[in-house]
Length: 194
Image (cartoon, rainbow, N blue to C red; front, side, top):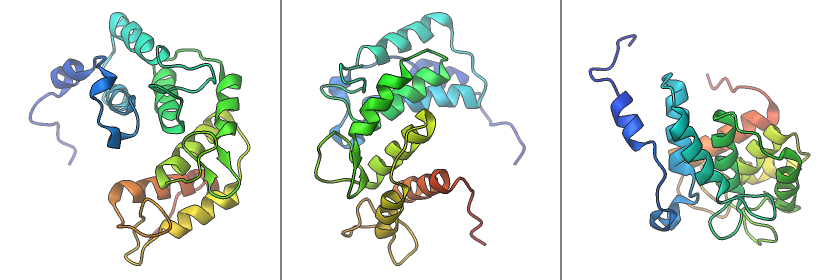
């Protein structure tokens, strides 16, 4: 620990920081912006400067998928794609109409689950709760924290991890991250698990 990596990752990161065809994004990835959001965040974490041309290209890529309902998505807006899109725009310091996006997030609130990925959906999953909580906190939207906590609690399995839905499933690290990060945001505290 405290040592530099054997190889500088900058070249690899910059080579992969580019726009891509959303037609090739596997449906199970859930967001056309997921890879781009991770790449932009990596650049910030390791202080890699994104040049002006790349910033503009990424900005155009994201804005291209903004929709009339003020959300973001390939064919229709989704909560997860909107979360990743805003993450990218904010990290690149691009202005966007927060009030309009707030209205989209509000259409994804659900009286049973807390949040759904698209307006009027009839089912939810832990990653949609995570996206809804992240966006609501970022945009200062009101939301039903009790419903979100109930959903998250229902996803916890006997092994301590969290699954995707309350009705069963296997706990995964990814879903456990979504659950703990959401609870941390909702309760505005870090957890001391020891």
